Image (cartoon, rainbow, N blue to C red):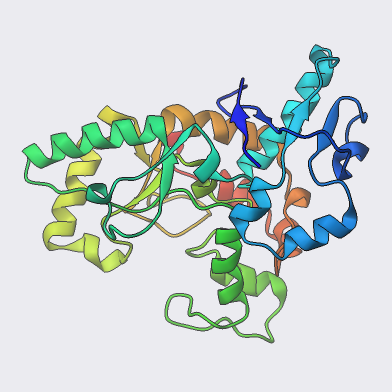
Amino acid sequence: MKKRIVSGLWGFGLLVACSPPVGPEEDKQPQELIQSVIDSSAEKEEQDSLSLLEQLDSSGLRISPKANAEERAKIMEIISKEYLMGQFNPATDQRFERIERQYLVYPDRKIFIRKEAMAKFKEMRARAKEDGIVLKIMSATRPFNVQKAIWERKWRGEQRVNGKFVPQDAPKKAKAEQILEWNSMPSTSRHHWGTDIDINNINPAYWLKGQGEKEYAWLLAHAAEFGFCQVYSAGRPYGYQEEKWHWSYIPLAKEFTNQYKKYIKDQDIHGFLGAEAAAEIEVVKKYVLGINPDCL
């Protein structure tokens, strides 16, 4: 189903769907104020078996003209939470654009990014080129289901974490903390927002010498001029390992961080293997908000 953005709060925007059936969202707001395109549990089960893009193209929220300001604010909170937690499709969202081949480490990948962040990356890249530095994007927007696939491969022991498989008999908290050294829980990744990019190489050793060391020194000296900040810096009390490749476009991401702190609780994190550990770990406080203070 085609959707268009007609208005927005905090940069999130409002998705307007084209058809009016009542659906599972009616328990959150009065029927006449908020409605879902999916109108039965049977259809919801069918949608769950589809791809991410199909799921999101078949769902959406709309606000009735009858809604007053308070009711609109409550509905926008629901929509905003979905954005913050990656429950949307960047391919059909007018705030995003597909990254052109020349800006990608892997040119054939289909990767999306917020338009504002991409415009500033292009400026930064052009400036870096003048200094003999080449900057390209490895990864940008990752919706919930993409992050879920990454997380669950590691949770099930199908993919290594820092060279080791997660022990399948370990407590859930221990398993989650091992994955969280480098990978976000679904619903908690800054890559959901379209503001964060991985640059050039995600191997920590790459950045310690040679060209990688030069690139990192350039980013430290100049990235802030274009609005980018290294969110996972060294010396933080908790959170992910240092990531010299992960840079966030702060003019947008700072507001999203503030809204995440306001709206999302550990109990909101669900829908994937190991989600039960989120509250015990305090994943919102220690990982979503456990970033470089210079980026707040």
